[in-house]
Image 1 (cartoon, rainbow, N blue to C red):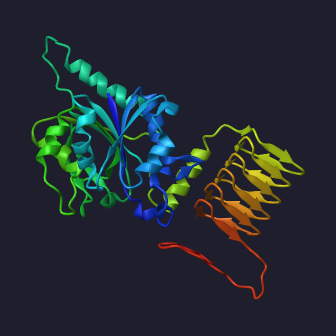
Image 2 (cartoon, one colour):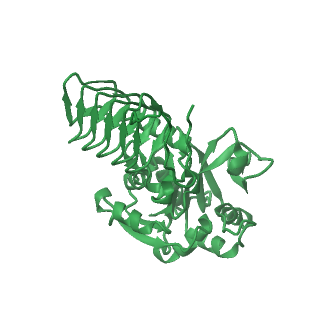
Image 3 (cartoon, rainbow, N blue to C red):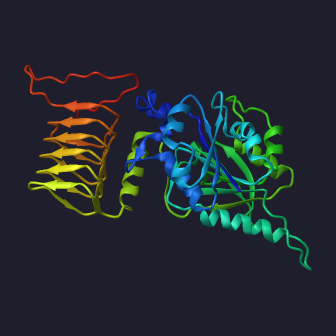
Length: 368
């Protein structure tokens, strides 16, 4: 089985961060979101992975490389524009060949590993190939992962029959047939290529994967499903990204590889990476301090990730993601924040006292 990870989207919902960076490389617990998907695939034994890339291709290639750091081999598949999930399958045809494959959205984060999901799919395929006196049982041409959500109108939604089979898929319906949303993890046999080639662009001009899966159903192919165990978050907006960061931080094993100086102390689930330095500071976990970061006379509260090479001085930071190379100086209380790379947030003490801002397009500031 091969893997296909979609990383070609523009990330408009995370602007201004994504004006200069791929959304799939925004860090969660100091690790790019994309890396979690690659690791899930590697753990499931999928080592030949294609990554669909768009205008941020160079940045993604620089971060992932040839895949050897993850124990996989990566092939990059350029997509001229984000024209739908099924379009990504279409352009990946040469890479995928006639093998089954797992497809994963590069900005999704989920707690459940892929291992069992993949094993059950392959087990069904093997069972259908084994003759029995009762006759063969058709294996599913696809298996989709679903999650119960309170607002199914925002997602592709599945309708499941009495026997557990998927009977209908609808993209962002006004009147959802169920509360089961498509998570963004799919397993396909090669027959999906026939479906992708047969469908037409939707009203929004995209080749929808829901239409391709519906084509399979309408043409007599079985489509199986599983309901997700654990949490799932679409990290395309700030608040879900911060929630993802919090959930992943809760799973980290405490580790102190950096230095604690002066009256510094840590409590709870805290990781201090090599080269990081805490001076007269207090860190309460779950939290992570990146390599080479320096935290002085400050408090780092729960659910915070301080990126590599950051400086935090005379400040309090909680429930936030601070990306590499940023500086936070003299800020009495910073919470619920996503700070990009190389930013400076400082209280200078200049008179007259005022708030002085230099903001890029699509920025958001809460002065409350």
